[in-house]
Length: 292
Image (tube, rainbow, N blue to C red; front, side, top):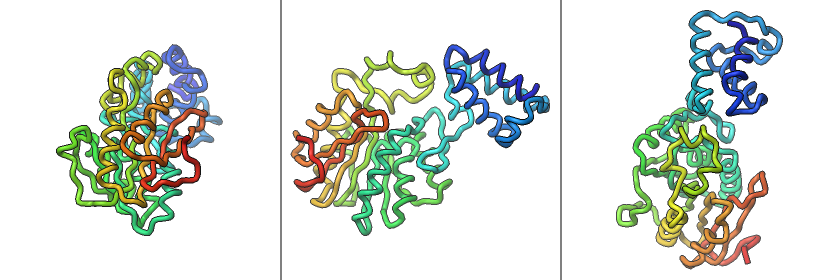
């Protein structure tokens, strides 16, 4: 089996799921992951012959791709904010939109000498770890309901050589959420996709990524934001802030959750696609651009 044959087989097997451009990009990743070929070899040696063992590895990987299994789960890794992360079916694959939340948070954290940052619904640990890496004076905590996700997050912290204090907690059970820190900066990318929006999502997401980390009931789609607002009300001080990723279709309703909790200073930003995506909530009553 040659490089050229791998590309042709991938286009044939995955043509109903992905565009040709997407298929070619994924095959290049697989070739570099399994065979450690350079980018130059991929383009200049189309007749490069694989060993039988390597050909079998690639054939198996292509079959997984053709079933809709995400590339990141096949290779077991992805990149977030320029850092390497392990991912598997126990955690969401980090998205570029969440990188925007991290960049904004890191910029705001420059005003704090030794901030205490809490990442709620941490999953792979991507937010907490990226913040810890870029803000070395911060004490970073992170929680999740899933013990399996926390195990992945812990390995990711070790991989990136940062200290994050992980703990298991269901933030929807306010009676069990406790921390000894009284002044927190809270970050979160909680579940926010309504079940009715599943029809808009790709098969590779629906069939493989953890639904508990993605979806909420249509009857109460803001349940996690109410929990976050309650935690913020209890643990935030006057110089703290909350930053959350949101469902673009529920921006008004989400900001109202925090207003109802007594927060009056909110700032909304759109993502790279022009969709309402991140809200910053301040404890104090001033910010650069408040939502009217």
